[in-house]
Length: 220
Image: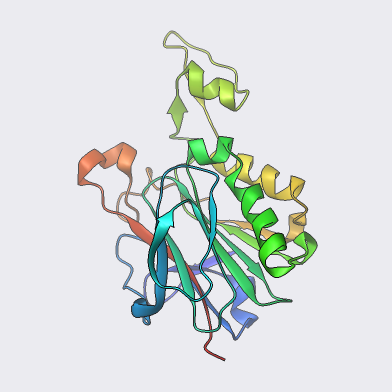
């Protein structure tokens, strides 16, 4: 389950017990989290590239998943229909922030981030907690036959269109990567449907802003 905090970020209920972790999935009204000077981000390119922050801040190159285990570190992705996914390893105290649009989903960025955390931190996938934040839902993500084919979705209707469930596709990847089903939380919040709450590129095009989703480790 998710709840919204006083800053306007959605949080995972079960993660509030991790005193060393701050996290949030942004909305169009969210207040920028404190400690922004220690924030690490990427130039997001809809890829499967994962980058280890290792205590660095600023824009750390191109990619779509950022990993961190440095106390005081904060990693974030920006979205406006693509899915933000946060991964937390409470055993070794490591986190990842993942940007998963349809291209990144096809490239298996979520599974790649799990593997990258295993390589970088020694993370056991079975220890991971995962949260899939607000993004465009199946209700609104209508695609043509080329994209539908990437997801093995049947197309129908005069326009030969299909609806793709990005959250379900990424959840399957996480399960295949070894994350347990009970450890995956999904917000089920559609950014395109809820105009008062979320930015949506498909709805607003160039007028759309971007929402910050982050995971931060305590300084000690």
